[in-house]
Length: 448
Image 1 (tube, helix red, strand yellow):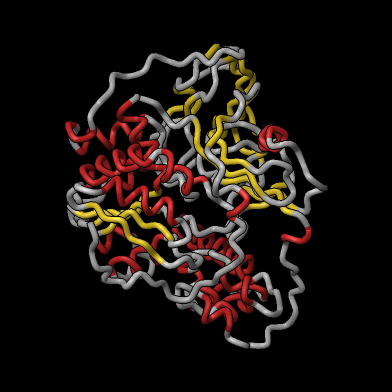
Image 2 (cartoon, helix red, strand yellow):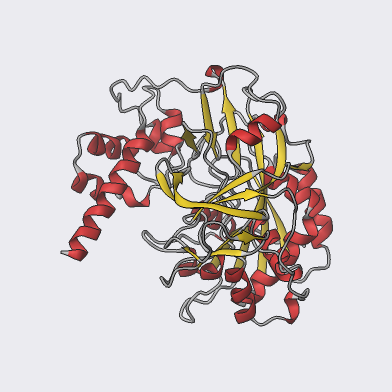
């Protein structure tokens, strides 16, 4: 099915960095070895951390709930990703850059699972049942934001959803895990899409893919043929095409208001990996204990797309990919534009980890941070229509009121401004700091 795109398929601003996807785009998904030990942080999602329901020394099976959702409105459970013994419940290094509470399981080498629930048909489930299964499975957005899926599937009655967008753009350089999922698990993705549409009552859905993935586009177009209300939208390859607000504008022409959410304009956006995980939760009763990631970069010997158990240490996966080709300049979790550099290779893969990039000096941009010459390139590149040069200056000098007046909280932290800056100023880091300070002051004001 083909529909016209009210938003004309284009985003405002953006950049086109080298893609480097050729390293892994043609490599099928492989199963990573069963880890000997996993570290499962209680914080793997937006919202309140899960609460442990197991004790040190307890034997567990894969798929077993080891931490239940907190009583707070936004939270999901955490499940054991391997069978074995609970070795510790204590703070451990987290991809966020600090130590956070986690459950450590020492594997017994046997891939024993809890008894699976009977298979269900998404089309026979009620919206309430779909949301319940999503929560029980610990599902979160697998595009990186890690927002609990059942919350997204529960818009208030005052904000009806008429359009679902399944995000397969994968606009970050290097990453190809979503690309491979669209090729290899097409039916599971569309099965999850049916459940998402039913949960929110949407009659229309787009599967959005950038034009640099022609094989995935052809596969999806063939698969959606005859499916009522579902179409494939082919978008120009441009970063950050896959950002939620930009994607909505490009496809529907609707603008999410400042401080607003997609449901404010009648749209729900989910990642293709999330849809596949929802299908597994419904059809097979499988909770979210594994995900597909891309291990890549010139610094690793054998780049790969891997299905890995959550909690697997980064070091183990790099070793499985042949180890370092040379001393790495940086190891990044996620993509190079919005990912997080890690200093400790013992940190685990969590629900929101989409990739492990092992980058060499040649692959890293220089950061000189010289004086701003007000060339305006950052303004033209900003997909949100902000003024990064003024935002960066305000944050650099700790003028938080000024940064807030320049709408710092509307920044999506895509890094386009830093990428185009001829002075190589770390603008996105400045703005991120400003957002943290503004939100902290707001929270303090509420408490006071």
